[in-house]
Amino acid sequence: MNKQKTFLVTGGAGFIGSHLVDKLLSGGMKVVCLDNFDDYYSPAIKRANVARHMCSNYQIMNGDIRDKLLLTGLFSRNNFDGVIHLAAKAGVRESIKDACEYYDVNVVGTVNLLEACAKHNVKKFVFASSSSVYGDTFCPSLNEDLGTDKPISPYAATKKAGEIACHAAHNAHGIDIACLRFFTVYGPRQKPGMAISKFAKLIMAGESVPIYGPGDSSRGYTYISDIVDGIIAVMNVNLGFGIFNLGGKDEINILDLVAMIEKAIGRKAHIKHLPKYPCDVLSSRADISKARALLQWSPTIGIEEGVKRFVTHMRQDSEEKGR
Figure 1 (cartoon, one colour):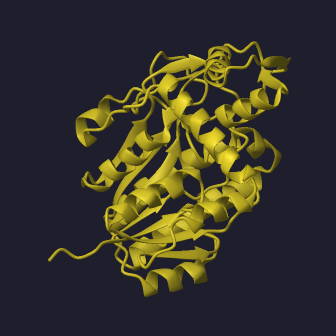
Figure 2 (cartoon, one colour):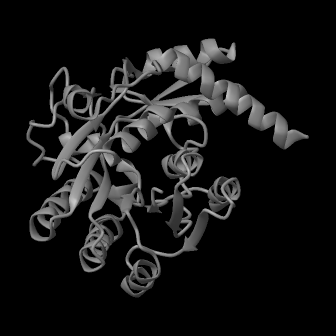
Figure 3 (cartoon, rainbow, N blue to C red):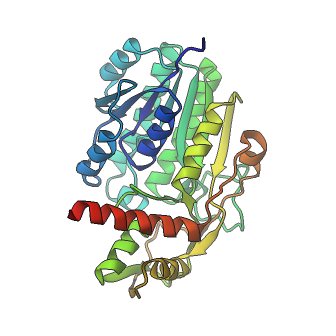
């Protein structure tokens, strides 16, 4: 009989983490979630995410990845088959205001987890990186071989540093490590301040939608279920050390995205143009050839379908809260 696998998911109460936990539990896995319920956005949202998971195969630990004593106890009590490291201080713009905290959490915390894996002989580690590591590279499609030594925000720099720490840990300890560069993930449970969630709520409320700059910046938006499938795919292969883009099917600029949300909601947006942020990149679209070839992964949900699903879920959620 096959042994039931146990995974540590850091940041498992958040947007991506809670969807991943859904998938792992439905697949019969045991999950230990480590989350500090940071107040970057309402901890009540994360607690609602956690509440849906309560079962015998699930354990929640309220704690910080910088707490080495906590990690020692956690790894000593559990025989983890792998660690999926999603916890991080998020936000490109916010990182400008408090760079030291971002480096402390995102770099030191990652190194702590890698050291715990080495000490307790955990041989599988998945690191949530970001498309922001590419900086403001002018390229129609970003691939993993492009240079990433010129990040334009502290957040991006911490993610690049995390990738480097992962490579060092792989080389020193033989840990099988995959660094996944996520491209603008969206969907149900999305953080309130992210574009699609923020725009949809403002349009529904009849309030102004802020557009920073002329609205020509574009992104390859990636639906949450595709990201989760990518994480699962990389957990099922052993490649030593690898970096993979996980990005959506379509690239769309901000103004066209707003128009698409307007159509899904059935209401016109009131757009307010504001000065461009210095750390916003103009374009970010993933070349997913490597993930397609080595992970047999490719996205399935296009942006129009994804926006429709998001708006439907948001309305359902609003109706349930109003009862």
